Length: 109
Image 1 (cartoon, rainbow, N blue to C red):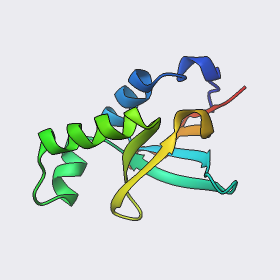
Image 2: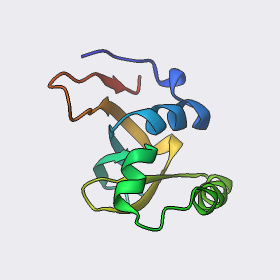
Image 3: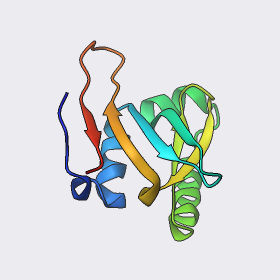
Image 4: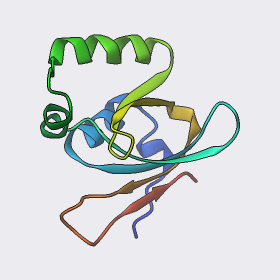
């Protein structure tokens, strides 16, 4: 288990890079105050697999709209749907690659 200081992923660009290449388990606080544990990604191969009409332009437009509102859009692997969360609501991030038993966890400090 590897801890990563919060400010290391306190940016949309860094988190988008992680999401575009990895499966992540993100725990965050929802608007209603409850915590949510979500397995998510932005990996293109997974999006193409789950979205028959995958359109990168449409996805980018959706992401830009959500970023403008302060949220980060992701594909929820377990719900098989788009979900979003606020960067400042993240409690922890865990690398959750399905092809390995090892995982790394990054928690807020």
